[in-house]
Length: 388
Image (cartoon, rainbow, N blue to C red; front, side):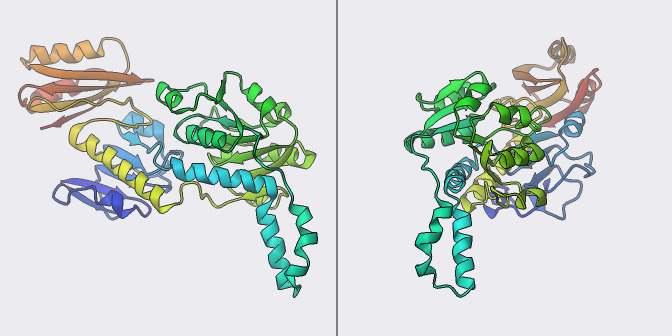
């Protein structure tokens, strides 16, 4: 029986993926083997030794201590692309709001009515304060061309925009998803110089912290409109407020409000609505649950943010899942040890990611616990698990 602890409210569509005969799932579970979480912070959570994996029903993992998880041999999964359509639609909404101050206009109409004014007599005169440009034939800069960024790029083209994209880590799969009319640039400053609108679709890391700062705004086209549905820390709040005051930035739409931003003119702050649709929450929950199940039952790693992705069709009588340091001769040491113990290896897969490597070994027969302990005792082994 596997024990899955849930944090936050997880969509029933995801919870239904767990067979009650194999899994006990709930927020009261202890000594859990897996965790399902959305936005709840696990930074100070004390992980039990039984914990094998954490699945985040979403993309951002800044609520999970990745280094601590890696050192403990805990796989961390996210759900890239599961909420991509929801965010794409909100980006379109954000561009329109940034252009025409639709929220301001709506609030003005309500204020007139609340003051006893017949709004039908004042709208023609009052609307002039909320006039703004169309997005048609304007230039959109997309920073990050993954699942969300590629969808945003393609739909912006269909809206008649010219699109420039920047992603130093552009994968082959992501490139294939992009319309050929997207201008993919290698220098982000080229995007800055051309874009009337800039939208962010990158992860928040120490490298991307305050990526949009004073130097970046200085390189942008005057009057640019910024959309941030990625993470708040990517934009330096103090410098974008200064850029708004100076007129270098016309509008800032963010999904990560702070008291400082909310009180700043020309900022449209939303309450983290990016993936808040029933469809998105279901997609994220299902994808997270499936990743967790496949890892617990088969040892396969898909969409991990801290460990290499390794997937292998099951063969043989037993599977060893070995997480170890990414150093020379580790694979040879493992196979040599198994050979010395007279164990036949039927299939094997090994991949690395940064300082860590993961090896799946399918064996022709079930082996004694003593052999598994021999593998555990090898230098630089982090975690060994046997699946029968």
